[in-house]
Length: 102
Figure (cartoon, rainbow, N blue to C red):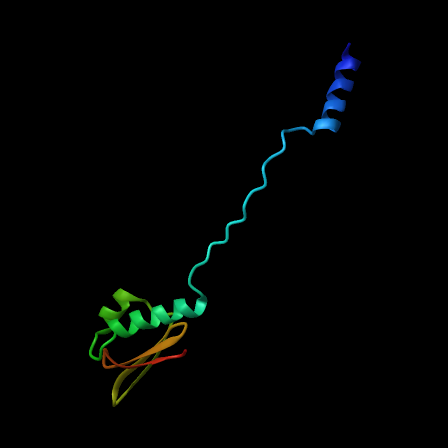
């Protein structure tokens, strides 16, 4: 009896498969902004925010730098804040200029 059951299961598996056939799934591709479009949007936001005279505290509250290069001398304190695709330049704790690499 046990052998007949095993043979029946094996035959049904070979003939019909172990599960009912599944309908084909549609492939869905999510399309979003390209890397270049993302950079352009980031630069537009950056330009809208930046203005000369912002303090280092105000800018750091918005976006902390990846690296800071600092020079102190008789001329005062100069800082270069480095980010992925732009740099900010401070003189005596105030934003003086910026450079965008795109």
